[in-house]
Image (cartoon, rainbow, N blue to C red; front, top):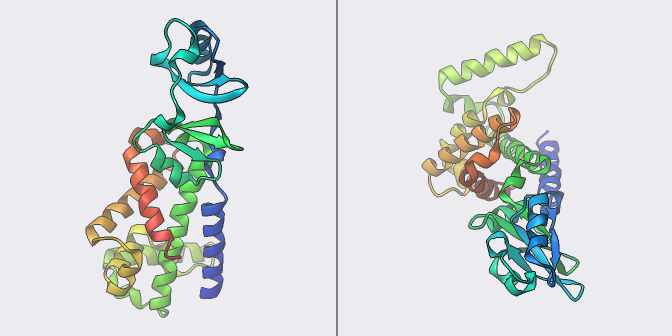
Length: 257
């Protein structure tokens, strides 16, 4: 049973850590010719609603132009080198994109050796990011269930849970059983319940690699809040710092799998 659980967990980890990349959420970088007048650049910005443009010179995108840089004269005269802003490779992971966007609302993406795409913080609203986040929370919950049942194969973890939380889980399991659904008691616990059990066992808690229990408790609350927001299609961009912290905390845990 545990081997099957671990195998599924590893397959899911591979899917969600390797199956998603920054290319799933990028937008093509709008471009303007270096010899074009500023009016052309402003027209493109108005059409695409992106404040950044690539500048093409001799058939190649050689730099970029910010909305505030657009003034009179040719666009090439105000172009900036790409080194001024984060640039990711097309193989970059979603967490790498989050890190690149930590200090910048946008970053560029190099495709086939040339900067051709752009990604911004608003792109975390896209379906691939929501799928990735929900999948990662699920993987973490599976991990907690597995290490608990591995350490307490006969439900010995029950003593580490408050009576109220334990009775709630037992009621839920009875209801599921009444409907003909076979389910383990551990699977009737909330994510926070599983985390609390792990935090009461020093050996299990060490597997989470958090600096302190307080840090771990904060992360778990954010995981649960995130899952609720995803389930109700709430705007994720309203709390960018939380998304960034969650991504980092997920990485800490998932590397243990």
